Image 1: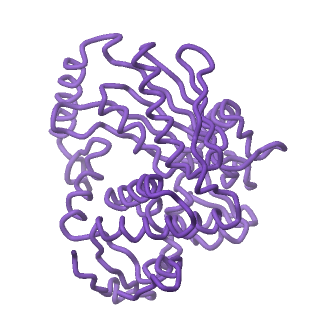
Image 2: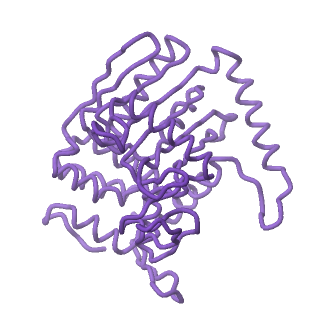
Image 3: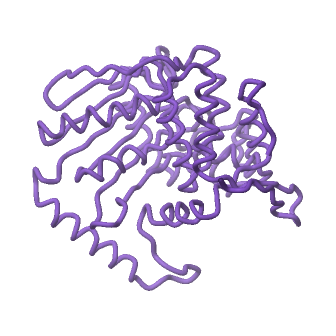
Amino acid sequence: MMEHRFVRQNANEAMDTTELRVSADDLRGLATKILRSVGTSQADATVVANSLVRANLLGHDSHGVRRLTGYVEEARAGRIDPTAGPKAETTRPGTVVVHGRRAFGQVAAEHAVRELRQVVAAQGSGVAAIRECNHVGRLGEYVGTLAEHDLVALAFGNADPTVAPYGGRERRLGTNPLAWAVPRGTGSPPVVMDWATSGVAEGKLAVARGRGEQVASGLLLDADGRVSTEPADFYGGGALLPFGGHKGYGLSVLIEVVGGLLSATGIGSLPGYTGGFGTVLVAFDIRAFTSAEDFREQTELFCRELAHTGPAEGHREVLVPGELEERVRLERGRNGIPISEDTWHELHALLPPKEEREP
């Protein structure tokens, strides 16, 4: 077991942050206990805990164990049913609807991945839409899993309105993330692209606010429609902005429509929206078109070619999507996952009184 030690960071900044380095195993154990405390089965608690800690390991702390506070609140309020089990319905050859039944989103999404693999094995390609779906965590997790089985995979979904349309100032769109993955050569993790269509994910904004940090200009507006760098302005009635101006906006519009309507979640800014996360997964078998081995080999050669590109001014190297996360995973696997002191105490406060403990 890794020794838990708080270390003070940013000592010269206006707001100091104190963090703990926690092993992935210890963090999974804590997350599992928290999830079990609200009635989640051991199997489902393991699925959710693994997903959250995996996000922390990869450096995506916005989608890591800090989410447990919200999950527990939603479970206690009845918006998440910790005891529910997803059910799949094949609608046509090549398509499946997974009824999440308000279970934890990770449980529903993992179920959808299994169902989609079966559909693709039979048909060569497939689409899965998840209904009654809660927050699923990182979409990249699911497309990455599919890519490891020689599939090209795409995932997207709509969420609660937090983003202003291009040229507007009021919330009309979700952060509406998109993920895409393809396999690489043997021994290399898949190429995984996973990002929100907003300039910054809301979870990352929350992390910045918790650290007392500002964000770059062009990511959010305050309640009066003025560009701001203060995360608090978003939580005070402002809005996030799409990435890439009209391009990210256009992509978000299509995700809102397709993700929201195929999943029966609805469009977030219209009547009838049911809340949650309107998730769609798409996959096709590389072997239906070409040799999977050749595909992997050529992708690996391309990734190496990209890595050998001479760096531009201000840059040290060229990375392929997914490589930075892999480096972070290795470092955090050795040295532990950084958890802020506040988050650590918040997590322990979620445990039943007899299980609370301080580091």
